[in-house]
Image 1 (tube, rainbow, N blue to C red):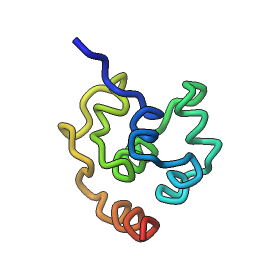
Image 2 (cartoon, one colour; image 1 turned 180 degrees about the vertical axis):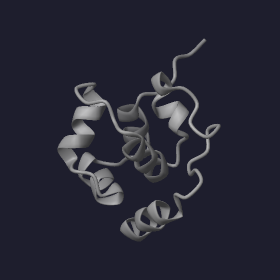
Image 3 (cartoon, rainbow, N blue to C red; image 1 turned 135 degrees about the vertical axis):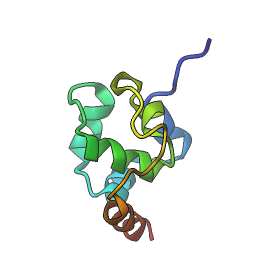
Length: 90
């Protein structure tokens, strides 16, 4: 069975730099680098922002945290976060 892609692999597959992903999420580039390298464990909000920006379910990017809202990109009460991510992408 093939392994799930890592955050870095998904980012590279989508041809995004760390700087561009940081711009889309509002996270600091160092935070993204540390999450990708395993030096930092991302908080739920960070996982959701990365999931939304990469259009990839949280459970795929971070399988170690288990299912979060059944593979959805957005959970209850997260409309504000999604709106702010979509504004940054434009």
